[in-house]
Image (cartoon, rainbow, N blue to C red; front, side, top):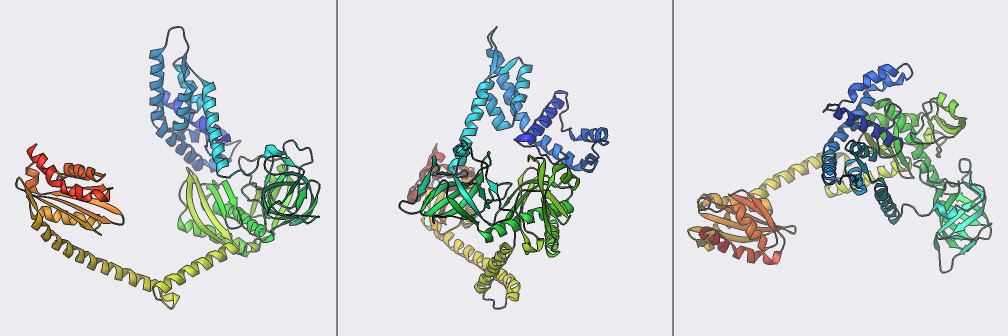
Amino acid sequence: VSDGIMPSNEGRGYVLRRLLRRAARHGRMLGITRPFLTELVDTVIHENKAGYPELEEHADYIKKVIGTEEERFYKTIDQGMTILNGLIDNITKAAVAGKEKILSGIDAFKLNDTFGFPLDLTREIAAEAGIIVDEENFHSEMKKQKEKARKDRLSRGISGWDSDLFSELTVPATVFTGYEKLEDKGQVMALSDGEELEDAISTDEGAKEGVLVVLDQTPFYAESGGQVADTGSIVTADGARLEVKDVKKTGKGYFVHTCTLLEGTVKVGDSVTAAVSKGRRMSIARNHTSAHLLQKALREVLGSHVHQAGSYEDDERVRFDFTHFSAVTPEELALVEHIVNQKIFEALDVNIQNLPIAEAKKMGAMALFGEKYGDVVRVVDVNGWSTEFCGGTHVKNTAQLGCFKILSESSVAAGIRRIEGTTGYGVLNLLDERTEMLHKVADALKVNNMKDLPLRAVAVAGEVKALSKELDAAKAAAAASKIDGLFEGAEDVNGIKILTAYFSGTAPEALRSMAEKVRDKAPNTVAALVGSTDGKITLAVACGKGALDAGLKAGVLVKQIAAIAGGNGGGKPDFAMAGLKDENKIDEALNAVAGIVKGILEG
C-alpha cells in the first residue's frame, strides 16, 4: 500500500484485496465483530521500519486504504455469508451418504459477481463444511461473462482491429522515429482490409475505410500509456493517399495504422512518406507534459500519498486519476493550478533521456504502478522538479504549454479522484466560449457594459422573486373563485357532498391547495380534483371531517379513482394524490367518484 497499490479487481490490486478480505474474515472467525485491521498497522510498521523507513511517513495513508477496503468488505460480507451459509445448509441436508457434497459453479459465480466473494474464499468456507466447489463450471461462467464483456466492447467500437491479423508476420518490428521527426520515409510491410492480409488495396468506387497499414518505420505515435495516437497522412511514391485515423501497437511491436484510402492503390513494398499532423501532436504533447506537472503539484499540495492511477491525454484535454480519499477543496485546486502555471511561466526545460533503470530510480524518477519496465527506461525530467518514467511525447520547454486550466475535479472510485484540465489553445477556446456565453447573457439582460452584469443579474433575480409572489397570490385568488363554483354542481351521496373537476394548466401544488381548502371549508365533502401541466396529470382527493367520520378515506378513494385512468397513488385519510396516465379516461374516472363513495358508505 505504501508503494501506491490500491485494492482492485485485477492484477496486484486484486492480490491485495484478497489478502485484506481473507484477513478480515479470519478476524471475524476469531470473534472480532468490528473493523480491526488498521489497529495492526502500527505494530507492522514498527517491526519493519528499519528496512522500510517510508512506512512511517505513509502510515496515515496506509490506514486509510486498509480501513476503507475493510469497511467496503463488511458491507457485502454479511449478506454474502448469509446466502453462502444457506446454500451450505441446503447441500448438507440434501446430501446422500457416501456421495460428495458439491456447491454448484453457478452459485459460486453469483457470490463472486454480486458480493465480491473470491473463489478461494468460497472454497475455504465450503471446505470447512466438507463441501467442494464445482470450479470447472465456475470458470465456465467467468469465461462467459468475459466473452460477453468483450463483445460489448467490440460493439461499441473500442477495438477496431485485431492483433491476431498480423501475428503471422515475420518482418522486424516497426521502428518508431516520432520522438525526433514528424515526417519520415518508410516502406509498407503489410496491408489488411480488416478481414485478412492483402498484397494491394485500391479505391474502387470512392474512399475505402478501415485500411490497416504496417510500416517498417513510422513517426506516428501509437496509442499507449493514456496518450492517444497521432493522426496525419501516408502518401506512396505512386501517389496513393491515405488519411491516418488511429495507430495501435501489437504485441510483436508492429505499429498498425488505421487509415482511409482516399485515392490510388497501395501495395506491400511501396515506399511512402508518413507525416504526422503537427498542430495536433503539439496539443497532445502540451497536455501530456501538463499531466506530469499536475502530479507533482498535487503531491506538494495534498501529500506524498498521491500516485497516478490512470491518465488520458488528447489534443483537447488531460484527464488525470490519482489516489486521494476526499474531494480536493476549491482552495487546494486553486493552489495546484497556480503551481502548474508558475512552472509554465518559469520556462523550465524538459529533458528526456534513456537511462538504466537503477540510475533512473536513483534520480528519484516516479514509475507508474502496474507497468513493466525493461533494463533501460525513458525518463522525462522537468528541470529536476518533476521526474518520471514515460514513453509519451512532450514539449521541449514548459513555456510551450502557454497556460493550464483545471476544468473539473470528481470521484471515480473509492480512494481515486479525477482532475480534467487543458492547456494552450484549449485554454484560449475555453476563454472564448465563456466570453461568448457572458455576451449572450448580457444581451438577454440588456446590459451594455459587461462590468454591470453581476448587479443586473442580482436585480433580475429580485424582480423574478417579486413577480413569483404576485403570481402565487393571483393563483390563490383564482383557486378561491374556482372553489366557490365547485359547490354549485356538487352531488349528494348519503349526506356527503361529492365535488369533482378537471383543471388544465394546474400544477400539483395548486391542486393540493384547492382540495385542502374545500376540505377545510365543508367538513361533509369529498373533493376529487384533476390537474394537468407539462404533460403530467395529477389527481388530488380530500375528505372533510364529516366524510372521515362516515368511514371514507382519501388514501383508499384515490387508488380506486386513479386505477380507472391507469394510475396509482396514495396518502393520508384526509388527503391523497395520484398520477394518472390515460388522459382519455379522466372524465370516466371523475364520473365514477360518486359510485365509489356510495359503495363504501353502503358496503
